[in-house]
Length: 198
Image 1 (tube, rainbow, N blue to C red):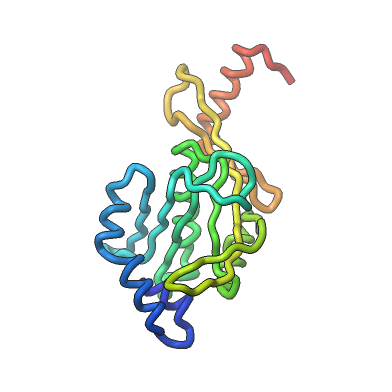
Image 2: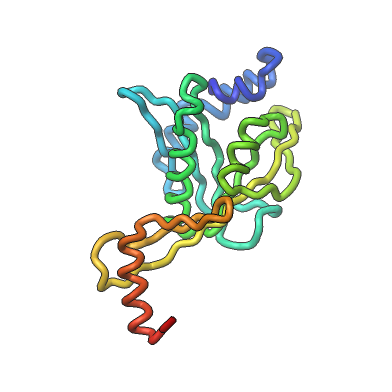
């Protein structure tokens, strides 16, 4: 709620903004999201206090996002005193992992066009801008951008103990492999069993 107000109520709180906050950020809405099998909320905490969260909705699609199995990063909010401390980066990584584990190959989101800090944040982490869309609430229409990141998962063979999936991200021309040690072992088994040689 606080982050939404910081973003959309920069000139003060209007009736429409207040109604949207009370509707979209109600206790009932979050309770339903927490128990839903179609979404996941990842929480970041510091010393027992919640300082941010990421909300992923599985299978949610957008026509501007590229083809693939899509999921949406519905919200990634970090309280202002904790920005710049890598909380958002860690929540984004968790959201990508959660979406990939649920079978998504594309994670997309729609940041507000005037939220320059968010636009820079996602661009620096390899997200591509796919065009203009609109966020509508309480009879108002706000310009947003569609950003997306490709997610790739590779199954590790059952003979390999340890993690069962490996996640790859491609950012700033660098491929990052999560669980690289197990990946190397799984890759060698795969290459041997499928007679792949370099």
